[in-house]
Length: 178
Image 1 (cartoon, one colour):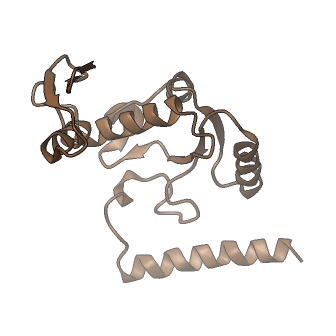
Image 2: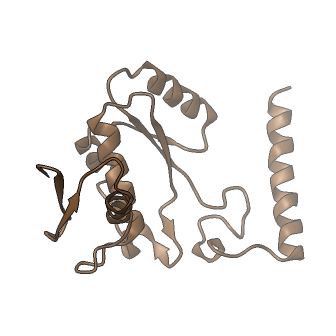
């Protein structure tokens, strides 16, 4: 809210900050940027949540039809499933509420990805979010859909097995193309 040469910023939880609004005021610019990215001391909403929210609002408000967000949804987080740790459902409806063109596809299907990108290019009025439903660790038997592999890498033996499985799957695809 502009009040003369001052801007009044009201945070998502009702806190009010009043700043001198000047293009040359580094302090005001710093505080505005800090507010947009830092969590509020009162409600403790994480910084990255506020940042994602403000960018989503910005994109839809200005009708950035040249913006395409590709969101990998594998339903796993570091501590378990997204449904039990931090449920984002109904994700499609939330993005549509921000005036996004939302496409949900199989993230392992290259034809579906190509079609979704073509649909994004055809959209002229609003940003697009392509939600790619994927399976974490797809193609590696001991990693597939396992939260245990979120924050660690394989040892040498596991790496060799993973590469053997992936190379076998690649060879089978190459054989199909002949």
